[in-house]
Amino acid sequence: EAQVTQNPRYLITVTGKKLTVTCSQNMNHEYMSWYRQDPGLGLRQIYYSMNVEVTDKGDVPEGYKVSRKEKRNFPLILESPSPNQTSLYFCASMGFVRGYEQYFGPGTRLTVT
Amino acid sequence: LAKTTQPISMDSYEGQEVNITCSHNNIATNDYITWYQQFPSQGPRFIIQGYKTKVTNEVASLFIPADRKSSTLSLPRVSLSDTAVYYCLVGDADDKIIFGKGTRLHILP
Image 1 (cartoon, rainbow over the protein chains, first blue to last red):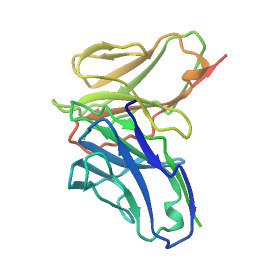
Image 2 (tube, helix red, strand yellow):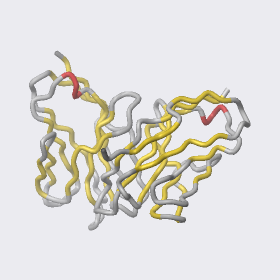
Image 3 (cartoon, each protein chain N blue to C red):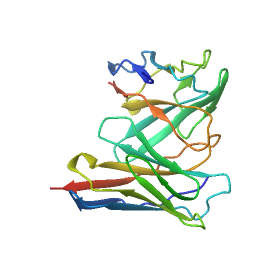
Image 4 (cartoon, rainbow over the protein chains, first blue to last red):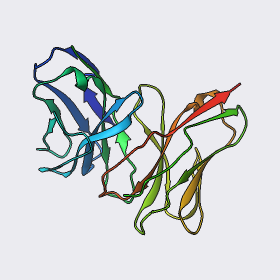
């Protein structure tokens, strides 16, 4: 089954404790992206990657890192999480056809205390 | 990157056809129009995409006039399960992707 998986689905952590949220897709897509969603602010893009070893900042990259060493994986790294990074995070992937036909993961709900 | 404008919310009744219009006055020649549906706490789901005229799939239809400055997502015979947020996006695969606030559709029994 074609899908995007994220782990963990739920995470509660403390300020400053480094964490990684994994994202993997099995559709051989070139494009992968991370979003965060907050009430009243909608979906905002954090980082995206158009292919292996190519990453670019989205609209809200501060406090996040990503890497794209393999085509299927695109982990999101929070080196020193803060409470304002409490949010619902989505990973997405897309093949390079025209437009924006993205496939989203199930989401990771992160709480930083 | 073309900016889009959609109604913040809409109400309709079960069994009705629902049309959600999106304005995108500065759409570029290469831009496609893409619509997503999102239920609470779930990732957005791709519904339909088009470039011009009309596109139809098993879920919805997308109407795009000749000037491409707007588009209309049409959902036939909606049910309660169509209550969701619907996002209109305009751009191409190598652009930054901006979702906006979307249209909150509420279907009433």
